[in-house]
Length: 419
Image (tube, rainbow, N blue to C red; front, top):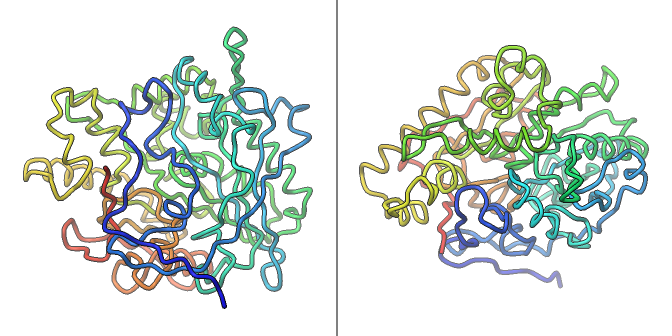
């Protein structure tokens, strides 16, 4: 008899809040360990019965060091791969891992002693759930594809190319990206007839940055598209009147040499810091691109809009942990954030090749979790959930431009509540 996991308790509980984008240890709000609870998906109302997820082992990229493609500490980068079969044998789904950024020497030095900066600390096996699941009932369109999770160990969205010899730090995100893709091409991806590049959070930023590069790797007859989940980080004014995220991205781009990897179509008109924001890139991406984003992205609320540095008196502390505790004036501010998100995608959404799923939820990274990607009670806009919307767009079944009504109208959300 198949072993079932009964997953669920009231409210999704995540790890501690951090000070801005990185606490003194360089950890991030999204920097969660892979466990059945936070990857495979607890239903927010106690529902969710899923079969045991497939565990997939870590593969190190042995030829990477010769190319200078190494993690922050100089160890080899890696990925997890599960081979496709049947109709999906020549189809490839690449997911770029997220996990914040490191923007100072201090934060990067700490990070290189974690799984976000060294393959020596990475899990040897991780569960493949959500868009990576190998079960048709959990991932109807991509379950039998070749599915790959590329681990994130550079701290600049696979975009840096520099180093700091004094601190023994290697900022080689761009080289890791290139080495990983070259290795996968040698493992059969060059024969793909279908390919999808995806990523969540910092990996969602990387997906936008590298989308057209990914397209250029394949034959013209290959169907190639990109999916960015929770990657639409906005350059907005925080609750203190400053731009916390812009300042942080400026440090990342400068420290790690990420400006070298930014698209010329953006840097020829804007400074490199602004070109690290996907909102300034998405309209110029030539490859079909789909954006999945929560209109009230919890990471951006906690770490960009109302971080402890922007809110030293703690007026936003309870609201950022639980939206139900937000005062009316705070919800008005968050509605303004949603409006800025919709404005940021207005030009992008006019292109027929692109797709959108922006739901009015307090969430972050919805394609990786089984309960939000595809389940009996997964979030939906109209009568379509995220998995069906992405599949319909990828296979050109339906033109998907799904934008939810403002909070609190959507009752299907799996809203995150923080301890």
